[in-house]
Image (cartoon, rainbow, N blue to C red; front, side, top):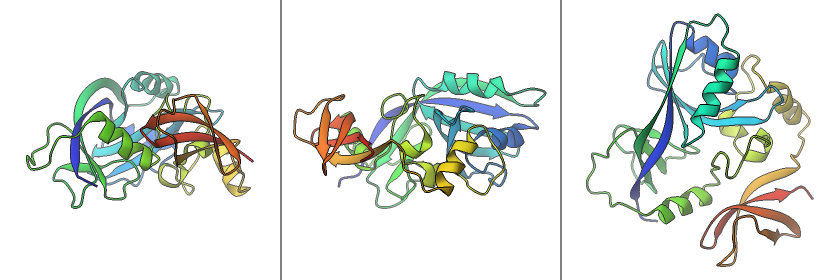
Length: 241
């Protein structure tokens, strides 16, 4: 697969203050307390019921400053949810939107980039413009195909505020099962300890050309609803057998 880059709109939330680290650790599904400066981790922000509020990537900028980036248009809900529990916390949140550069199908790491998606080394994002001019620009279809084949969901498209983490396929990378309590943890831990299967699960499949989002498809004698599609590549919410 050919390496390419595309511009990528991201909502960006800066959290700064003496309590930024401890507060984010108490609210997110990922272990934030142990993050080193420059380190990046994927995380989920949940409602107390365990439903997903946001899919976040957390970057530790310094000991008191963290950058949360998320899908375009989803940052406001994240800020509202974080502020709801921010009582006597010395940390300020500011929301903005930036154009980043997504580099995909990478053979070698890109300078100045942070890992994207599942962090397998094939997907990187640069905050700003790409300095390597030898990499060709791709199309939005190239990006969507790579995303779908990587089974990486977009908030409010593949998962919604009614989804639970076990549906998303992200618990392995975005949830710490050794950290302290956080809102929504009870559902996550209970399903993990019981090896419970979610009523629906997001998964990749191939479909016929012309398949549309919202269409039902049958895979291995099970029914799924298409949430994202590009050509013959699709993400579907598969119903539990």
